[in-house]
Length: 489
Image (cartoon, rainbow, N blue to C red):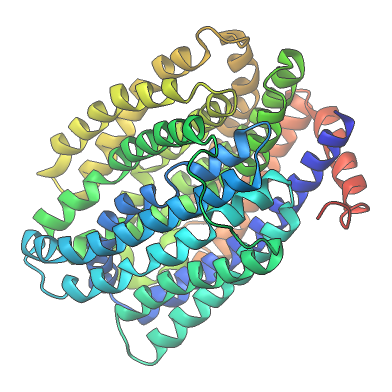
């Protein structure tokens, strides 16, 4: 277990450093692409990617998670799963071609035909790397995964900016979207050195396919819940409005997505190994949950208080219409940060069916909220989503911990410190805005306000809430792991 702890810490450090690099790259990409392209370009591609995103859920068929979660796997099982992924990828590529005319008619936008056809090839790239990625994750080779992710993203951004600069318009977004999985899959093949064999009929994958199928269905439900409003906005409000909405959505989710990506891969692998040791499982999970909450709260507060500055600095003046949308999305981001870790936990201990049931119950409520706000525009949709998610927070947490070793007191104990610290930071940020709103330009005001907020947040969290020792010990462990970075990388 000591080795697992060290590998988990090293993996966390690797992913933390990687996500920091990816975060900077994504912010640079957002800023440059938003200035080179128009909202309508992003809206047009979003009309297609909302649908291809649904298809993309089935690319892995949940089989990568099945490979990681399983206590032991054979080469025959992994090879068989690889070919299943390839068949699914081919099917999804053809499905993109078949449904392209339907989607073009739905949006009354003929350009989507070629966009859908091009994006469909991405399923082949993704499918070819699913099991290679799972093997790297199973072996907890997070440094290799981190390097691959950062390199692939850098290549993707280079392609996108190069095409946008050359005047390719919305095709620059398509090119960037395809470059990432293509480069990533090639690198994963090189990193693992694994070449799949032929599929075996009786390789014992039935339970793995069932596990993956449940996860896929759960992912499908959650994806619909999170993206139906984009389809509706594109259909009834057009590409320009959808472009504003999706850029606000993407910008506000970049930091939290990076955070979730940092923790989820390491957490799922580690927790799956601890599923038979209840005490260690509880200890590991609550520490990870504390870290996620600690980082999620200040991000959400910063986005709410300095929404206008963030939009105008990172997207530019022509994106002013996204400010209110951006601010109204912040409560939803906070709720997702509080709920997501429980999904990783339930999946890692084999309770993926509960995750699916939660999605089937909460999804229709959120979709109904979208419909209620649709006629009033994108801001009302964002507000309705946040309200619905806040109302669902407590029931979903209660359902998640039901019948487990965790209690409501555990949740309250982890939520209270960042909540109080975030409230203090919000007050500091608001005061800063009132004092300097008309005195400083946007960038200095954002730097000053953001620095003040994070300073207040950390002081209250570490000293006011008494978490100084926990985080100092964590930093000590991380420094120690950096000295062993080459081990198991």
